[in-house]
Length: 180
Image (cartoon, rainbow, N blue to C red; front, side):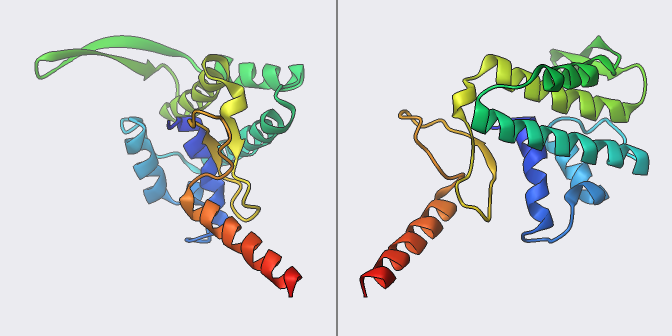
């Protein structure tokens, strides 16, 4: 299961891996991110908006870590989420594309605010409509990717098989070293 907010939070991983730079500061990455999450009609943010996005990502990362460890949020954090939600004004319009109708959300103010609104809305929906016990951080200390545990037993510890294999091999080698 994918969530817009998780994809956004996990973008910080790239600062220390693979591309070794913050993708939020890369206009091409932002364009692809917006297209992936159907935010393609929005304009690519300016420097001030990128700073707002960086601040939002830090905050969401902080509250997600808190949620994964404490399984709850403080009133202060809830109020800040609500402040983000209240800051944006939108209306809906009905559009026809080919032979289908669709409802589209249109920002009254800046299009960049729409990105923030959609990300924070995704986070609010995730923690209100889904089991927060399934929101987890990868146990690979070099990864710490946020993921939603869809396993039947709710015991998944790693974001994917690569991290699982890496940690299991390290543990195996450590055990072998201690036995010698």
